[in-house]
Image (cartoon, rainbow, N blue to C red; front, side):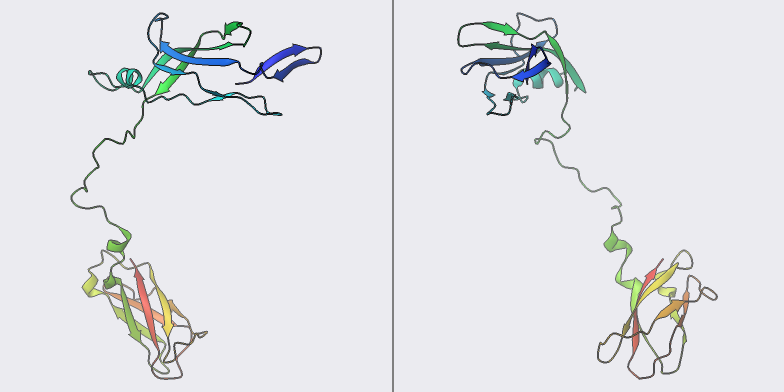
Length: 211
């Protein structure tokens, strides 16, 4: 909260005399003589050159919880009336106009039960990309066309493709690659053609099927 003083150049932020005390209070609408629902009289006085006063009222009060969560059912929000008052060391007391404050109910209250997993369980990445979608395809020197048997996967349709990693006897990287050939690919068989043929024995392709 910042106080403004009107001068010849317009409004200028100012601080109140040292020792000024404050009160912040919220009550139910129309209950001017009722008890506070939220109240705070501890304020942080700004240090120069700052001019904003700060307070941290607690909204975890029994009266507010009772308003938001009545016996007849929880409410999404409540509207309270509020006011800020301050008293200077000289005894001068004044306050703001009454204003309205909308307070929304919390979803997370830290005392509710945790949900249980539904049945059937929601599929996860681990369950979708199972080990059955991966494998090793041995390569033959001079051969570029291959077919991977997919019958055991029981796929609903032809896979979109596959990811490949070349494995060499020395595990060294190579410019060797592979691409999927669309013609001849079905739910039971993935046809692929290598971009280069291996020139040494012991090479293979590690693959991951993309269903």
